[in-house]
Length: 439
Image (cartoon, rainbow, N blue to C red; front, side, top):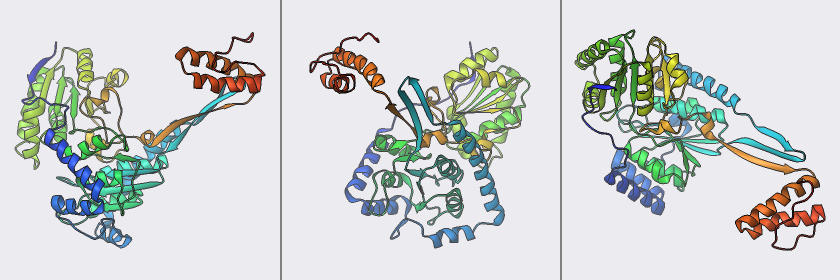
């Protein structure tokens, strides 16, 4: 049975705070009723930012690019190319299908891109320009026709780095607009912002709640909570590396869980000591310490099999594996957002540059979904053709009887009218077809 060497001081709850829910409900209704007027008022209230239109002009976008160094632009382009490379390979796996399943019956499906997508890029504590790579580039690869992006102002103006990332990724419309007002404006549409069909991208608790409430009116990528990390390690792992990888994700926010799962008590004790030492020098220690104290865990397991059970129970967003045989977890784990196998990689590579998407399931959602990927922007839609009279009659007889078995006379008549037309059968109105010799 697993032994807790450090337990979390605070229990996480997968529920929406009442104040957050009610605030978001009010904002949605305000924008529904007042449109751009409410959007402007809310932007002034929450971000202290007012302008005639929140869409950036080509001149403003170029101005942001001009503020960036060539080296920074090259780094952004490099990261975006890695995301594009992997997304393109994923897209190649998604094939349209057409097959004759019975003589004269053709079934198929097409993978159709969503037409309009809204991508939110956070800019609160940190300007997360990587979110532009993950959402905009991936949507472009999927074939989305219109991509709208919103990001809040930073220090009272558009963030040059975020705008550069949005533009270079291929966004069609860029708005300097943040928070719930951005999410709602994209979902519902206003006089100046055309509505989208789908919303993607991370955000704070209010942004997440807005996506939750608007789901159904628009599609979303997933319900996202605070960043999570799980390090799985055995006696072959380095304690300083484990501690660094844990705090590297804990700095996201004071509610970010960070867990060490190990078979080595020696490693567990030393990692804990290294975490405390790193917290004395890490510039973001104020945030990371709160996360570690409130939500940090160290769990000691008997063997790899027990670690596997615990890891699937936790279903973490990020899982870093530093064991003698990382592939054991690749082959056997079911519940995770993304795996980072071996000490040569880490979660930050995935967050920023390596090419896998960093928008991943949290709060246990990895039990039933993966993260954002090119397939999220595609609708797999089916179609059918019946090419012969004989095939129509053959399936029509089954359909007639099955419909009447359920009491759906109208459904039965859709089949019966074709039995009369294509099979010259005299089926009385509102009755089930008789079984033919062919059946």
